[in-house]
Image 1 (cartoon, rainbow, N blue to C red):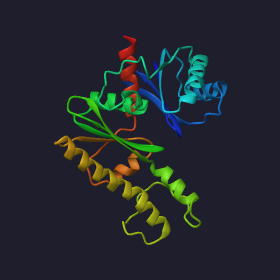
Image 2 (cartoon, one colour):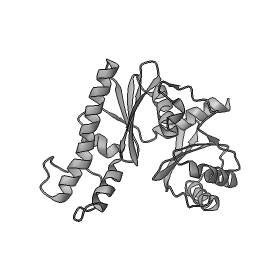
Image 3 (cartoon, rainbow, N blue to C red):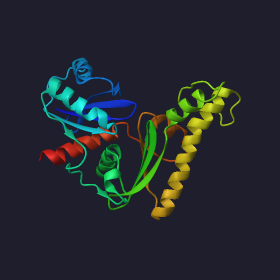
Length: 253
């Protein structure tokens, strides 16, 4: 079985796959101060809880470079395998048409690879995490570029910590757009406001593409935003794990 690890700024997403089938998945907190032994203990607990005993391959994508070596050592300690790392020297098959292809984050690469193999093109991929990213893929499967924005939770944290009276809130849409209290006003601004931003970006991306596109939403906060949008979007929580599987298979042949 394959262990796929996607390291984000807030969470580390783990997925165990048996071929194309997802056996189990889970999340760990991202903490650059954790040692390889600490992460190996968490990984061992995750595998034991899910009854996984046989890992014969592993692959990592990470936007936190400081954790790559730590996780490589932890995976080797628990699973006895040398994990592949998405980066220079790894075959992805993705045609990257930006000014400096080496700047493109591993998470965006992995997500695009999955989209190209699963959904009609052209496509627009929104990943709602610590940062919100949008990736545009043309009808030939080339990554054209995109946008990077402040993540929903990141913005709420900044708002509540930088003001005297605004509290922390959960990420869910209010029942009405015009907020009648502080909590609903903040929810409307953060959740419905982000959904409206998604709609505006899709319209402008499609205008530049010259055609309609498939819209895919992923990331920890993606489902909450998708519920608030008026567009027909596809929510794919396991998009990056699927992309990691495809890249692993391409490099292990």
